[in-house]
Length: 108
Length: 121
Image (cartoon, rainbow over all chains, first blue to last red; front, side, top):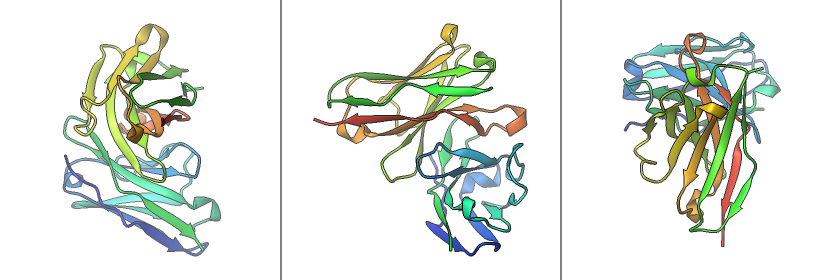
């Protein structure tokens, strides 16, 4: 199996930009997905296929990819964006997934 | 409305067996893979495995192979996660989630509300 590495925490002031990285060898060939999880709630998909946004997800959430690293960017951070964020990817079969280590975003 | 509804919280003793469920509605249950995810208290998300309800094709994460059994009954649109002998270390929240189709690029686009499993003597 493989690992996806994220920074444990990111702190940002309201209105500023938060960037969360996710690194792992499979990301060079496989898509990444990003999930937001607020305390006591189930995760929510916020980015798929590295940079696509599901319907209903605010435009301030965006994703990008470069080599073995993908990045989730939250522009104009709001207090409601305070949550844990996880990246995810799959192997070539598309059914063996792995989650990243998770990043806690704190809005100061 | 597309949704996955999971069974309620469980409190069991180590060594006991358990099966929890995840019922899909609002979509064609047999057309989408259903995955299971563990979240231990205060910890991150862990991928356990996935099943295709139409033919019960099941793929396990190496970390969970042999530790749990994933199954599905397509006649009642329900997926299951079961243990034959619980351990205290199985205490966690368990989520089921639907692997999306082309509209969500095979990310997990619909999640159940989670089932808390507590294994304690």
